Length: 336
Image (cartoon, rainbow, N blue to C red; front, side, top):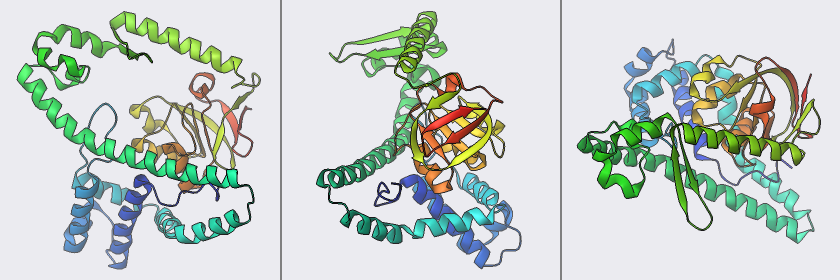
């Protein structure tokens, strides 16, 4: 199944990591004795490679809420960190370059399938992956330029950009008169858009109470729909096959990523590029949201670790320190 659902091209996340590993491979071939930030920048060829990489991927850590500009120094430090795990570098490069081989095997398998509808679904899934990945790439890049624009608007209005991010487009002209309201929204806000295009914006305590109400209802609905089959098990969709045991580490934000230790079971609502260092340490990954083409699924398949997505309630049911077994062949998490 993994082979049949394999995309016909790499994601932009995978391609960026491959490009970075190729720079490190070149540094190794040039016999740079100690791979450090300083030694890498002493070599003019490597320095130019890093500069071009930065120009191409400076936006890679942007999120839906803000831009994070990645500098050449950041990429150089990342290369230095990669150098401590040379086996990962070789594995990343080898797996990336084996795509044509995998696709040939996939074509051979497809020729053996007589179900036309299944073949159409598999091709559709591949197309959707490419559209989804390209959309995410374009959106991530655009955040960089949108943030520049918003920063200038906020500066002219005398409003901190952190507060300006809670503005609706229709309110931009009145930004200077909304300082108190924006500060309130920053402490907690909830934007609701209905199918009839009606929109509502709640702020402060009202937003927090309403959010918790929605959250409780979603959890209750998930339990009723058998997302949890019993008190000891949780169900999800298999995004990367395998089985692993370990202790749970729930990450609800970037600040908690550093707490993940080797062998932990990483549990998150969903993962973003900044989660990758923690995912490399994890024995398995479990998410509340996502499907076969989400960030967690793509990275876990690349890392060769089990991944369950779409559990709906993992971050609420599983607690730090719990020992669990992740069976990503049956789609079950068992609390041991």
